[in-house]
Amino acid sequence: MKKIDFSPPDITNEEINEVVDTLKSGWLTTGPKTKKFEKNLAKFCGVEKAIGISSATMALEMVLRLFDIGEGDEVITTAYTYTASASAIAHVGAKPILVDVKKGEFNIDPQKIAEKINSKTKAIIPVDVAGIPVDYDEIYKAIEDKKELFMPKKDTMQETLGRILLLSDSAHSVGAKYKGKMIGSVADFSVFSFHAVKNINMAEGGAILFNNIGDIESAKIYRKLQMLSLHGQTKDAFSKNELGGWRYSIDFLGYKCNMTDLNASLGLIQLERYKNGLLQKRKTIFKRYIDNLKNESQFILPILENENMESSCHLFLLRIKSIDENKRDQIIDEMSKKGIATNVHYIPLPMHPAYKNLGYNIIDFPNTYEMYENEISLPIYTKLRLEEVDYICEVLSNILKEYPCVVKN
Ligand SMILES: *Cc1c(COP(=O)(O)O)cnc(C)c1O
Image (cartoon, rainbow, N blue to C red; front, side, top):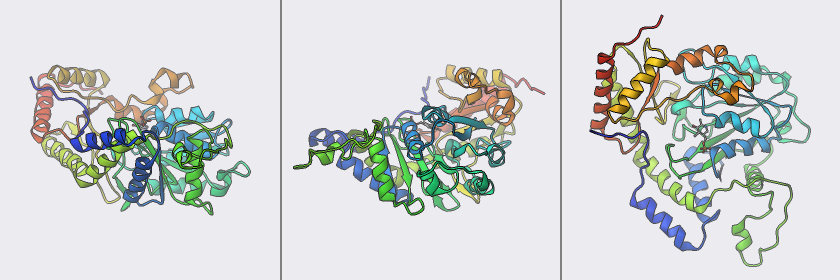
């Protein structure tokens, strides 16, 4: 029996050689390779600055801390995401405000964001689910429309920005485009993940992308983020290592989530390969799924692009008409018996105990539940062969024929 994994890594000798080069270089943690990766990433996305962080989760937290967001503040995010988007909000002591997705879509509803904005709202964290950019213009409009409610803390970057911060969780959407602009350059701040299952794999890793904010230069923001992510220390280990550079100062009690050169060596190669073929490969696989499945009326297919956006094809979120959660789970089991690993993205946040304890109930997120109950994520990764895509589609179609759908009403 064929065995098809869900998202195995695509690592070549190039990555291996780069990692070995780092191991032999005598410098393992934040250093020249991290700096080079940051420059290459910023250039790829058309922004002034990128800073490497140990994960996207910590990257979100660092931006919230940069803006002094914490106790007594509210931050809006989507119910349809991985817990990281919301837990970073809780980690700084602020309250995560979950909102529903647009009907028939996986992305947050800008209209519902507008309804939740009040004088405590300090940031909005939308998620480009599966690599499809949210409607950034609509979210900026909601922020603009409610501008008079904004109450910034004195002498903070909140005050400099003068409105609610738009911090994009772009963990899925590196390489995607919104109205012709690269993701990373659209929101005030954007965060990427380079976790092993993401489009660019550094085992673990994240980054923050940004430009100037008002009259605060991006270089100054970079410096602040660098200190936040390294104990509030005025010098990183690499500059301390330079001749005569031993003296340092701890200016505030910061955190510890810097990127290492070991991870950055993976990123340097992965980013080049992503630009030169891996992203295109994802698109080819995505299209092959569409070609195979488009003539069967029981499927609701995800989109690759439209007049506003181009997806990064991080996930292939298929929906099957007229099935409920149980039926969907059965189909996943049958696929698994045939050796095919599938997944569900995501179990909505209000369905998890941690979020129920915060008072959330899935009943209040009808659009989110509707997207979740009949969703199956099919494997999409750069080593997946097109014949394997055909095989996955064939197995799925056969399962649906053998086990006629329990039509719910
Ligand atoms: C993977 C993921 C994250 C977290 O990324 P890490 O780098 O593992 O911290 C955040 N948000 C979303 C939507 C994700 O899928």
